[in-house]
Image (cartoon, rainbow, N blue to C red; front, side, top):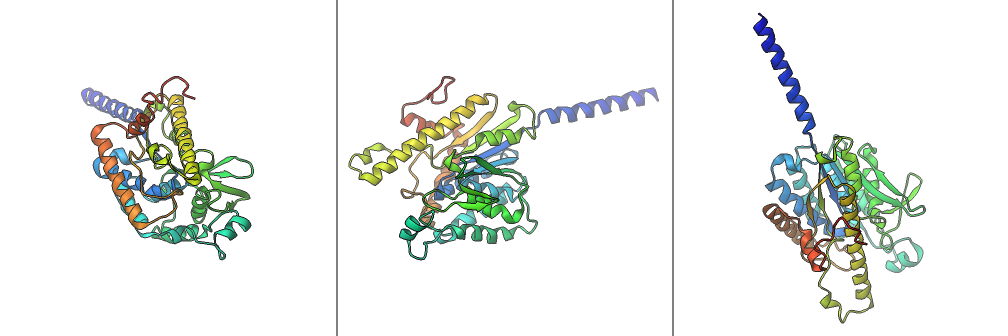
Length: 344
C-alpha cells in the first residue's frame, strides 16, 4: 500500500514538474507587418512561403501588428484561429488577387483637381471600408481571434493610436481605413473624435508593440520570437537610373532614401532595446517590386508578381537561415548596420 502511495506521489510530482516546465518553455510568436500600399502583396507571398515550408507551430503567431496596408494583412490573419494559418493565407491570396484599385479608392466627382484644392486628399478612399466590410461577412462569428495592433495617427495632435482585437467588429474596417489613410493621397478618417491618418506618418512598422503585446503572454524576452516582413521602407533601388531624373523622380528618390534610413533606424533601435528578443526572420524585398512612384496602382498582374517574388524570397530565407535584409544593408555598405553603437 505504501509503495502504491509513493508511486502515486512521484507520478503527481512528475506531472506537476512537466506542466511547470512546459509553461516555462512557452513562447510568444509575433508578426510585424510594414505599410507599403499595393506592395503589401509581397508580404502575402512571404507568409505563404513560411506557412507552407516551416513547421506548423512556427507560424502560429499569437500577436500581429500592422501599419497601413500591413493592417489589412494583420486583420486577415487575425480573423482566423491560431492553427488556421494555411486557411488564412489562402483567403489572403484570394483577396489580393481579386480586388482592384476602385475597391480601395476612386476619383472625386471632378477629379484630382477637386481633391487637390477642395478635399484633404487626391482621391476618395471610402470604398476601402465598404469593400472590407463586405469581405468580412465571410466570418459569421464576427471576432478577431489573436492579439492585434492596428496603428494610426491623429493628424491634429501627432499622437499614435492603436486599435486592438477587442474593437467592435463593425468598426474594424474603419480602423483599417484610418491606418491606411495616406496623407496627400487620401483624406483623413474621422473616427471616435479624432482625425486619423496613415500610421506610417510616425513609424511604418510596429515592432515595440509586438513585443509589448507578447509580454501579456510570457514574462521573459527570451521567450519572444518576432518575424518582420517589410515591403517598402528597407529597399533601395540602384541609384544609377536617377542620374538623368526629373524633379518628381528626384523627389521620389529623396523619399526612398529617407524612408530607408528611418525604417532601418527604427528596426535597429528596437533590436538594441530588446537584445534578448529573437528577431527570427526579418525580410525586405531584395529586388525592385512592380509598382509606381506611389504604390497605389493595385494592378492585378503586378500584385500577383509581388506574391510570387515574396514566395521565392521567403523560401530562400528559410533555406539559407539568414534574413533578406542583408542584401539591402550591403547595398549601402553598412554590414554592421545594427551594431551596439549609435548609428545615427
